[in-house]
Length: 376
Image 1: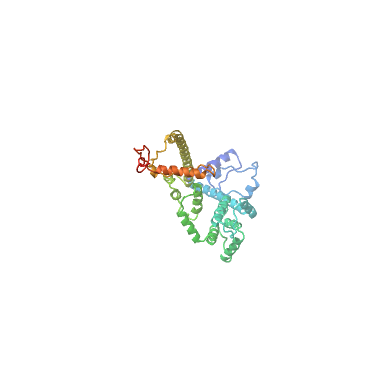
Image 2: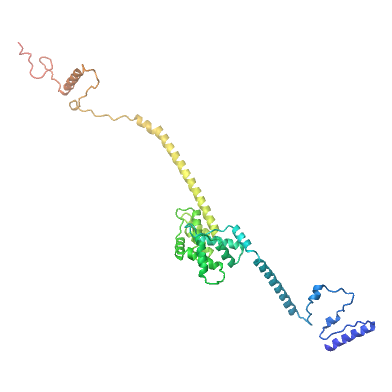
């Protein structure tokens, strides 16, 4: 190999000498054959730019392999990515704090005072965390922005908590802030009580919509119980009423069923059952009205005429001697009242006497012996 290179160089020198040129390429020590073949710069060649003269390119290695070229390309790509990430981080850090606070306030996160009994600490943490995720802020900025929404007694608690972290502490992150906040305003006993309430939640007399609201609100206090979507669906279906649980249990077995779809299905199923019940009640009412109208026609057409044809049963008459006297209650004036009463009494008395026997001697009716023969 060295002899071949020497022959090539001598051949080129002979050619240059034969052509009468004064510029003969010289091969420096350590210079490769490819570099020796490069023509030398003449005065007619334009000068390189100023930045190239100031920062000359690194010398080309005498020889390179494909592995070395690949390694060099990867190193260059890595340096470019690192520089780009550094420029992005520098731009985010240079963003004014006032701009981030203004963006946070424009998203309208909730405010927590710590003095209103209607305030829910868990709701405050959940809504603020949702707002911070939209802004894509860091954990340290999240804790700082969340503390900005504290008011009244909550500010006093935050200052006390900051002092309890010791002198010159590291900036608090979101997880540290949220855990300390819930530990103070939502003790573990209350969270356990709400978790138990979630386990015992049943629909009962509530509508499906009201049951969904209670379910989603209490599920936050038992995240380990509904960590998997299948567990969440099972807990929801298990608390439904007996008129919905059978159909929803079958629907929950469908592959890919999630909590949103099963809740929508339960609401739709309840609405259909209400409509069916309303139709049945309407049909039942119409049937009752028609039946009542038929009974009325039958009563007017058959029952009432039968009563009109029925006469009162005859009353058995008692013997005259046991019948009570009848009095004429008609008023005939003060002068006739005693006479009418006397005649009525005489008539009633005669009715009560036995009949007078007929006498054969005198052909008259009388009691006792006949006196016809004894008269003078």
